[in-house]
Image (cartoon, rainbow, N blue to C red; front, side, top):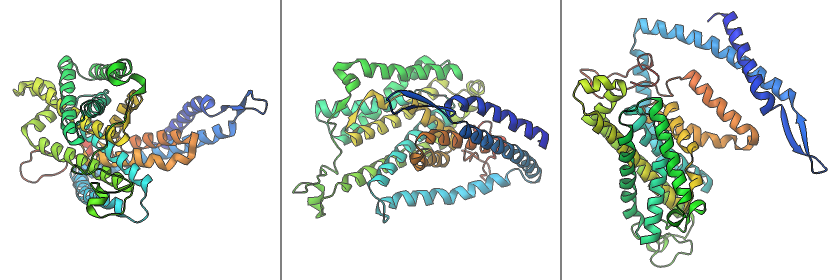
Length: 431
């Protein structure tokens, strides 16, 4: 892109930003001394933001032009060299992140806040890996994944409070019930693809939420369910008072509330690793290769004799099962659930993690969840500017890495040397 074209592109971007920021930033209502609302004008902030957008768009346009030229030259020299280098770097990043997550609770200076944040990040990593089976591997756009998250949470809450079952018994039951609802969703949408599939799954998520709100006799309605039992360590409860028969008493430890938090951290860590292990194993199996074939071309998939119906239903069921596991953990961690925790924005966040990380990439999803959920806390002090910075960061990632943070793919089956597939051969993060 030449400099005049880049300047014109930057001016258009600045004008669009001006149209957005005039009302969002330029005008603000405040409570005056007399108690009335007063309108305050902030045109200087609007001018600064438009200038930042203009400069940023100009730099991005010129940078993208140079990057495309460099990629074209690299493709002529060796199309697989960059992909191989990225895959090699990933072999070191993944163990480093795994080791860091394993020792996080014992790092000096790590307190309750950091552990709670780590639990939240691992929960979204598990949800992202579960949705990756449906969206990243099978290519089925699901906007109602939060429904299975809710089914798992309410299944555990009802089984634990009404029947007195322990967490370890309710956990597989919650996954089975969520998988059952995944199959129920899969049957009506077998013939749908693309936008139509997304609309139906979005409607399914809203139906589940509305049922949770209105079925007061079962779910508690808007008041939710409270008093959900906490998990135990092989029958040993966690108690801040200590005593015989508790975790601290049996192991001779000083009673501390952090014991339960550390246990919950390693519990979701183990569940996330289980999700990752099952996903990687299934991807190398005939079922996983059928998912990838379905993602690339459903017509060719049928021509090869693959049972498309069973392939789709298995993707929905297995992805929903892991969502149910995460929901059960969420319920036991919070000890209280309500329909407000399972809105569409949760599905949007999980889908954004999958897309930003790179659809089909386990490592990319983990990094995206760390950036979106953990990095979001860094901007908490910005208050009203936090969402603006967060949205700008997401846009920047999509501009710089349009196919996700990790855009290379390792083939499930390869003849001879197994080499990563470069981003230039992966259409919109798929491949």
